[in-house]
Length: 390
Image (cartoon, rainbow, N blue to C red; front, top):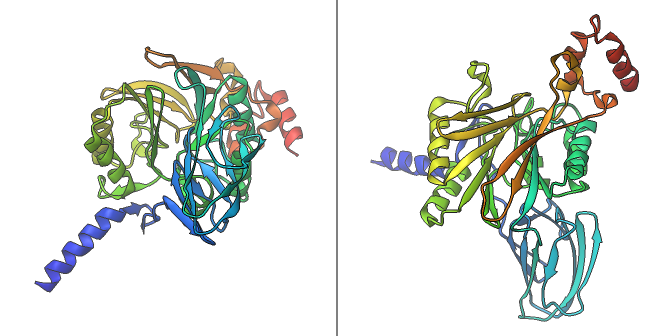
């Protein structure tokens, strides 16, 4: 009897938390929806507080909201990162000051005891906008170029599809680049960001955002689903709870775009680079259909591919390191996806060349590609790249 009860409690706990594999572990705790310090409480919507910081927050949606309350009259000062330069702050906070520094806002205002103050940023491009998407960039010069190129192409924000961490120092460099990007970035976690010779995911949740999240802008819902490692049970954990909550709410969005690291299928026919198992893949597909998500943007495989798979338009844009640009004999270039949202019409996707400068091809993971080209018709080109990377 006792053993049966213990098994039931353990099963319920594991279902709630989810077990991750490979690198067997429980999921990290949810990001807090409210924080408090020194008599000030903050309710958070679509943003979170940096780890070990009382005054820094980061948004993971275009229109974040914060509600402050205090136990005494005082002046509040903080900064909010990852906010569109075009976002407009709506509030009735007294003596408010807002300084803009790229995608970071530095805010100060007076608050009275027991009188809540709401801050809500809204963007003027809800109905018509362009967003970019690319993954597998590493965390150095290639990522910097992807961010710059997204802005050049007119994107209001970037959906990064994971795997910015390939070498020592990438995590720290990527965090800095994401926090100082020209446009906001909403990031799904990749397998290299989750574990690489040990668990690393705490850096993601400390500084970049949640594993799973959702936001709506105009008539489009954007759904971030974590596929960095398999989850057991597949409908459990934070991912399963988010999906089930959205299904239960039943507020069908006219269009839903999902983005995730692993694709539904590997176009090569080899199944080592798609979602972890057939049953987990089928659960994801069933969930996407229930949520009216017709598109899944993904990376993980360092290619471009667009295939309808079991009723889902699966677009793979995992070319963030731009190595396809070195294979000029194939007349193909590395691409990033651009989603064009227009009022009262379906999203249209275009695929723009990444146009990464040759001197940025200095990532260690590029070495096998460069080595295969050194003695052929690309020899002079590879010499130029080697010189730039020396």
